[in-house]
Image 1 (cartoon, rainbow, N blue to C red):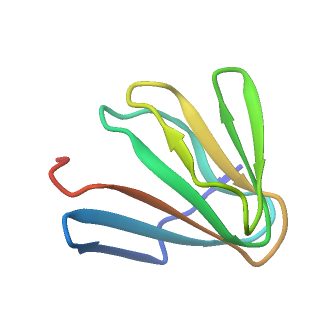
Image 2 (image 1 turned 30 degrees about the horizontal axis):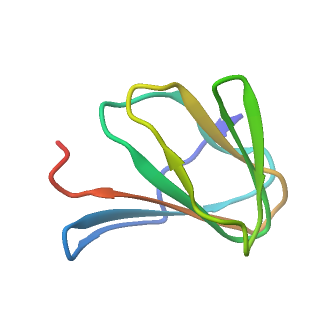
Length: 92
């Protein structure tokens, strides 16, 4: 998978949002961190791999709550995929 940086990264009302615009095969390779976050797919489709599962997301899919300290990755399944990660801004 090709790692990509966020297209937009900003703080608002106590939260940090990372907005990612991805082509097929791009995303966030396996990683973990000490805070939980929600992931939402806004356009296209993506797969989130966590705890040995593959969770497919597309617009209209319920936001996914990813726990802290658990390895996970997010991969775009098609060009034009847009997803966001949202977490508390108090995280370092």
